[in-house]
Image (cartoon, rainbow, N blue to C red):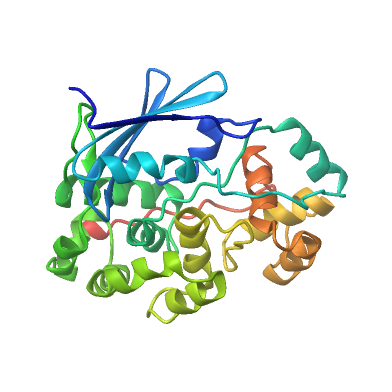
Length: 298
């Protein structure tokens, strides 16, 4: 199937496509195959699928669907080309070393706010394993086939989620509280999408005005939808411990201490978090593992 739009751009070196796109939600809408990344999304012009392939210093982009032109034209932004790390000069020995060794990371900007809200809400107060499983089931059940040759599924539209009763979410492992947050967000999806054109402070204020979207969820959304280089998901279960362990070697820390440690990097705090995450630095974990819950039996 021939693409309906194509382009090639040359990112600022160094650039690593896989590392840059890694923060995007996994699931039926994203696929890595034969050296290329495929992504299905709902653009302002309609559904689209893009294929991105890095060849040397260039990235080749192909698009299918009504939103193909929009998706292809915004591919550089998706690949973090609007990300500006000017002024990021870490002094901490570990962060300085990671910045030198882990090359090519950019912070992506999808411009798809509602599509970032849904998986972020699903991830609230559950394990990553539970959230990934729930999101996959939700997309497979309520999404639709994406345009193009790849076997991808579009994320469910706000209209579909809005008319889905909360109890139907139980089969995806999502209880009433999170289901109702998603339904309310779907009802005001246009208001959420408007934050792409707002300044970052206004964008956070708009997001946090929605019931169920607090500092943690807003930061998760801003990281991928807005490419906010300073996003810090305060309230995360593991992140404060990982930051404390990376900076001080302490196995346990707090949100307050995490913010103190990251303060010298204000403006680039998400960049520091990303480096630590990519490096696989996690604090030692003690005690029994949090049990997985099954809401499908409710």
